Amino acid sequence: MILIAGPCVIESQEMLRKIASELQPLSEDARIDFYFKASFDKANRTSLESYRGPGLEKGLEMLGRIKEEFGYKLLTDIHETQQVTKAAQVVDILQIPAFLCRQTDLIVEAAKSQSIVNIKKGQFMNPADMSHSVLKAIKTRGGSEASYEEAKRLGIWLTERGSSFGYGNLVVDMRSLMIMRQFAPVIFDATHAVQMPGAAGGKSGGDSRFVAPLSRAAAAVGVDGFFTETHVSPKEALSDGPNMITPQALKVLVHQLLALSEI
Image 1 (cartoon, one colour):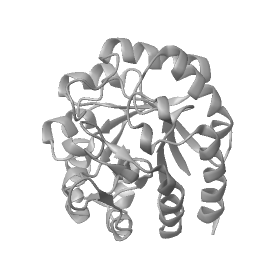
Image 2 (spheres, helix red, strand yellow):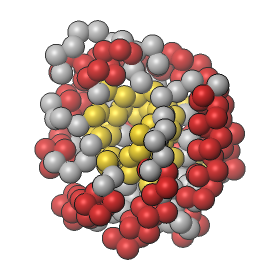
Image 3 (cartoon, rainbow, N blue to C red):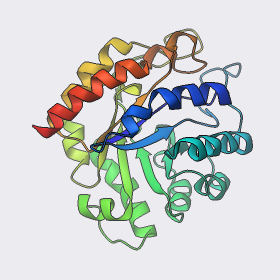
């Protein structure tokens, strides 16, 4: 089972290290293909005043220290084509943010690297139409068709993070997991799926109570892995605190998900 976990955004080296240390038991489980994640820049924050992160150069340096100390494989977001080369020198997965899932130049540039490319489904997207985003990356890497086997072979993943439902709310249509898994490995983003965009006056709200039940439902449907943003103190997090969970809660949840996946 693939597990992607870590804070929404890099806050400090000390906090990165603290969270990374808490997640170490999960990384040592032979049943888990573990990736530590954190963003060097949150370029899609609601408000200009919201914390974005340390930026590309400093952020990659901080992530590199985590890799060196813990031996973790890493994931981070990219927002512009010129970020690809530098990010790919440090991280193992380049993530295309949901709002940029149709950006051809960004997907193609990411696919030119040696990193796995994880494309997050936009909240506004028909899951079937994500096959076109996948095919952009597949063709860039020499493939010819959007199929699960081809995408897996070439290191192209999709992530489901819910769909817009009216204003300030998301829902997860479990059918989308089956639809997208026809043409790529699928990761379920449990924490962004419980986000409430713009519901907290200039920033996103959320309800982390629903992370576990939605994750269990996704495991029952069948997915390749889970993306779960994690913080030692979600209420004090500088980004996405309302929808993050603690490392301890994640450990309990992963135990359940592994059991369901075996079924």
